[in-house]
Amino acid sequence: MIIALKSCNEDTFMPNTDPASYGKPTDLLYADILNAREFSKLKSGVPHLDTNGLVPTYLILSGKNGDGETLDATSMNFVSIDNVDLTNEKTDYSTAGRIQIADGNNFGLGDYYFTIKVSTELDGKIFETTFDDVFHIQVGPQLVKDLLFSPIAQNLVVGTDKTTTKPYLITGNPDVTFSLTSHADILQINSQTGIISLADNYTITENETLYPSIEVTSNLSQETTSFQGDSFLMIVISNEPVELPKKTIYFFYPTLQAENTLYGYKKDIITPGAVPYAKTWLQSGPSNIAAAERPENVIGAKSLMTNIYIKSMSTPHESDVIMNTQDLTKYSLGYDVSTVFYIKNRYVVYLKDGRTPTDLEVYYSTDYEGNNSKATWIQINDQLSCQIQGKTTSFIGTPYPGNNKGIDPDNKKNPTNHADSKWVKCTFDLNDFKSEKNFTLKFKFASYFDTDLSYSKKEGRGGRFYISDVHFKASEE
Image (cartoon, rainbow, N blue to C red; front, side, top):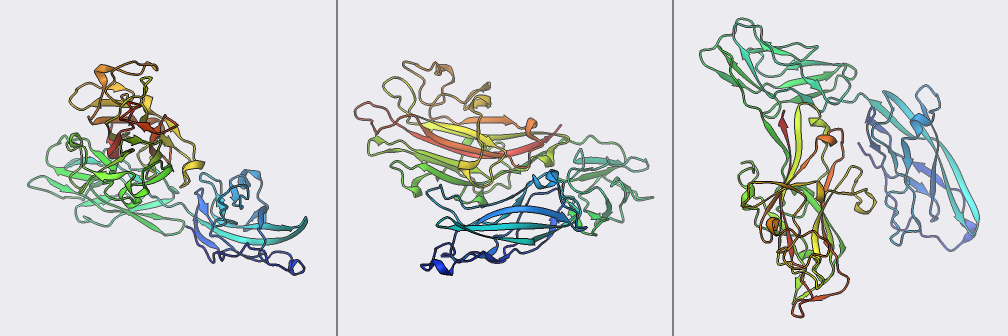
């Protein structure tokens, strides 16, 4: 959890006009974080600090635990502190002094304190202060966030000793106990293992389907988490064994109906060209061929579309659609995991040398944290399994934009696999990424020309690209 006690004023780092009034930084103050979780990512709030208007530089000198023992490099290497980047044209002071502890750290249960040195400089003179034990965190047990019964649908047979499988604790400190908070008159649960069986002497006349609620209690802190639902556990009680179908969980299926992470995405305009911000990645009708897989509870689905052809001209444009980051570790056991989306291009006319002027590039990142330019992005167009509308076979790699006719300088055109004005279903296998907590998918409208193109002069046309029904799913193996 992030707790910010006080943010810096807008003029915090604007120097005053009397050099004699400068002194050492004072009053560094962080809010304590009292509900951090062991081994998990943590961010402090931005601290309060008085530098008399000078830009501060922060340095973490040391850390110690609640017993006063100094933390060594195996712990401190996970800890960092934000400073102002004065080399950037758009100087950002908003996170200065924020402390971060990376995910997967070795900070176990207990209290920790950090000593920070802050320095400022004016005309070659350095002012610095060391603030002992100024930042305090209290680390509690990692709670169970993901409890997995595999398979989801399980059969209990009256008059037998059949039980459910033992659930997997995907995350969290394993020192827990299990209890039922529903159907306690029908079911019983082993408090140590989580295995569920029928209550003694329970009988039925016809099959019953239950969705039990299970509470997991940390024995270390007595905190609880609860689980229930058709994507968690379904129990069918019968007098004879029954075969139950495997399930597919659509764990992220945004509607894209408005520009907001609430609807699954954000956009980043790199090179606007002639396209106004409000006209970039507009909502349009969803893919018609996606309707067969689209879950019934996904209401109001839209596609996204950008068109750079304006008044007979195409101007170089680059913009990104960044989908909400996903934690794939929840499905690391017992599932086949993939992401699926539908794309389309229209009105792309090739340059005079036969190349496409534009394309829709697809990327993923495992270190994106809100800053597009600082993340590491890997392009995957050539790894996607694609199927063109109206065809029954798939192939690897996204189709080349346009009609795929004419000269082919890059040897990428394929007249049998062209998808001009057709929806293309693309699938990316995520089974190699099931240990990733921070998987992000991105689409880029990319331009491969430098100056305006006149369609009337047959110089080419940038066209438009569509994105629809982007989703992540986990299918029981």
